[in-house]
Figure: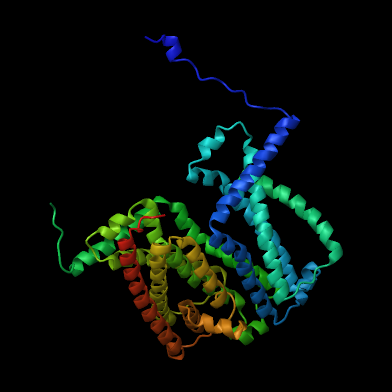
Length: 193
Length: 284
């Protein structure tokens, strides 16, 4: 007969790595990368769905541009010039929509990251791993930012080919800096959701 | 062994199927009240940006350029009417078109398709419940449109609009039947619904007049029931025309309805037999 103490012994405790060390940081970066790779693998399993999602931003952008062109009867609006300093409605709508796309990505993709794992039935398995929850969500964020970047690239090509875009070359670098700051804020918002 | 009734089911039995489907779908809707709030309120968020955009670009509430294409300089009622009728497209595509796929997810599709009843009446039941839901949402949006966005409704146009919406619903559910049929075989109903939504989004005059599109896009738009419904309703409400002036749009909408419903039922029956014989009905 087994000893009562042996039968009901407590499970062995495993100490999770903690603290800001180089080894831990490398492990968390690897978690972010692996989550990103996992999301890409799932996404590319459904190539038709992936192509549709890449085309989607163009489909939703076109009505705004066509509607604007019909309202003004041309490409340039005096009223817009008075309000924001530019009269080119196509470039104005395009730049606004690019940023809008990333906002949507952050809220949807990151907000749904936990919920999706619940649907797949893998949330518990992930939660018992000795990794930070934030790294897990940031992995999702990395995937969604790259995904949205590809969609925006297609969007740019199509709008440039059909309407042409008047972008100032010297403004691209400062715009990217502002854009990077915005992405940090959006990641925070996504984690909150 | 239990024997099932053979022969053609009575009209009363078929009505009971429609009623049961309706009750089931309403129970689902009541179980998730957030969905009701979503479909009532969120269409406003989809068209309000177009109103602000119009005001920023034009600097007022009327556009002479818009009048050349649409026949009316008031772009706000134009967009609001477009959004209200477009709500029927969304609920039909995602409600009825994906309903078969949802039954598969819930694990009830096999039971439904093996039941001793005409499957068409199951789909009619789903379509009726979605139509009633859509009409509730549209009515609330119309009231808000009248109060906030300057839409005018006279008593003389109510009955013609009800007729046009009825014809629109018939056409949309014909298309949804085709979608349900394709999802029986190819499963990815969500992507198909989205793709069809894009076609409606771009090629029907929801936010801009059809004449503003290139010729090839106008031709494509003429194959969509929503195009004729929008042309007819806007003629009645914005251009103040009478029903005799829009008989062509109503007739063409009716023709499209017949074609879509016949093709939808044919496709659904064909796909049902095909998936039953191949044993892939309940596959994901």
